[in-house]
Image (tube, rainbow, N blue to C red):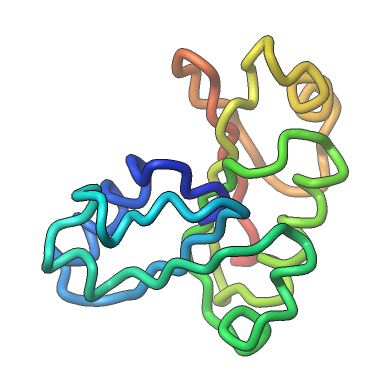
Length: 143
């Protein structure tokens, strides 16, 4: 997950990991919102979540992320420029499992017109728009 903020999406993903008793979430943000201390995560969810503080793309060189392999799900809600989204996608592509689903939040949010524009012509990977309030673009990498 890129863009932890106060941990709402982190909590939702971690809830699924606890339910399935498998997987691990690495969540990255340049600001430490202290999700392990704030009450955003239950005690059980904390066991499945590693929070990493740093700015993309530089944080991708951290020990935890450089060695990461097998990403099956990526939730991108950090940078909201085309350049930042492409950098995040390149990291996921280099570290993904055979098949990986990528969710990009704010894909139709009027506050981020560059992301809206990007996905009007994006054809690099199979994708579709989940027409939520702010839009969530869904991409499939691999098989």
